Image (tube, rainbow, N blue to C red):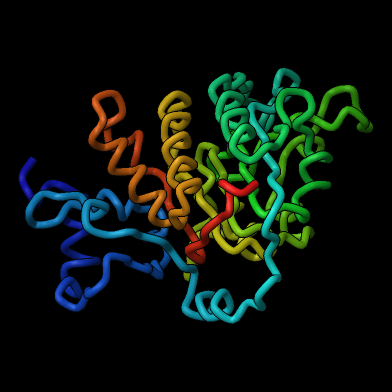
Length: 293
């Protein structure tokens, strides 16, 4: 593909090339405008045909005001311990948007059980991963990790239906974790990982994408890891194994993400761009004390 035909090279030329000579760090903090929230910056192609993630750690910020708010956050506000792990909620009764029948995600269950061993936490899976249980625990933990189905339009998350409900057939209110639900909770998590298809999606506005990721940040989360598109079940399991391995070593979230992207990119089985490039980190660059849990 010629340079002028490669969108990843074109995007680099437009967004990064004009300021490339001014970059003196190995980290890029990007404040995108409008639809530029939906592009995979890590996969931008430089003039020497390297991906941007080969040189820089990358994270996103909704605005410079948001960056200041994160910097000025009182010490001790965010929790240092506790994890909420949610994987492969039971969706056998669920019909999304009145038309979409969902399948179970066996690798998502393996994913949270793997993280559960690291954090000494029992994950919520299957019929236990209800909306009620998730909302009850969101405000009391330092780490939130959800591996489930996400809505393409908003990134909102499909959980297991609440067992106590007004109708035998569950409505979306019984199982869908919405932006409003999240904003109504005071979240004090340092890191929220939404290992869900389309969790970085939402309505594109002047100030960026308004979706579930922005809701978590607005509710108090310090940092949110999300996906821009539909993710492969098996590849995501491998991605998260690597990501948490680096977190346990004491790496920051942005460094763990960067090292994982490059590990996947260089691997034989998961080197395709669609498998490693969808994840973006929004907010502050946090470090978790996972090894000491």
